[in-house]
Image (cartoon, rainbow, N blue to C red):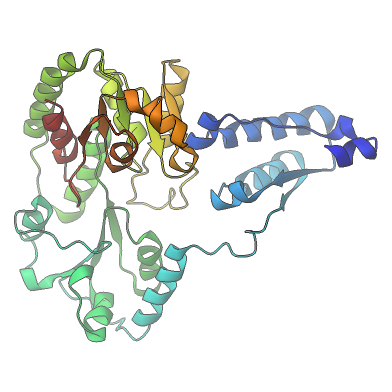
Length: 360
């Protein structure tokens, strides 16, 4: 601002204020695109410079789509100018791990595929009573189900390249799966614990179609509706906070549809456009959509990044929460009843039913 003022160019500067809620759910990027497009339409500039700081870089906000759209639709060159001490080192730990993993696979065979499947997870081994394991055992013998967490030797690791399918459990390994598909032709199916019925069905339909097995949709759906209709009336007047990771907004919107209001949502990171959204077989967590719906409803809802929680907030606002769902919420709401989802992938309605049973 001061530089523009000194040069007499303040009329060419646009300051774009962002609320913490819009930033947390990623809606600020949509509004930024509208602003840039309106400038291109009304002022026909030769170029537009967007100044961003470390927080935008750490959030990995997608400016490339804005750059491409402005060039294609208006012939306007958009340049994103990064500032801040963290810009030079932007490689994430997940990226470094993927590179290391793929380097270890380099000597893997790329010949005839074996009748085996890879389970890529962040370290979890499926228990014997896991519905996913039981489903896979209808198709594969136990020794042909290759769990990443159970690998013991380099040979075991390299044998993954001979498998006919990668299944990603719990949001782990997207970059690895994409590269394995490119290099060894191994398709993948991504799974994550869902709460909203439409998303549960979409994920399960993709999985059952891929494996050519069946799943009792109607029976599980009936059990879910009976449980939530039983629980909802008992939560009237309760102050609820949710902080359980990437599906917090989805859960809040689901509860709202059944008359259960959520007062606080705690997010670990800023939501942004998912980099794998165009890859078949990947169900996108529609957190931005749910976040926008919640904010548009105008309910008494606060959305915070956990990095912005202060000691005063914990003593005042968060101390009044009655029920804290998820480990993040449980850690900040000291006086609340704490409901933490057990670790591991929850198939079908298992995740939301576990939460509802704890709410009773």
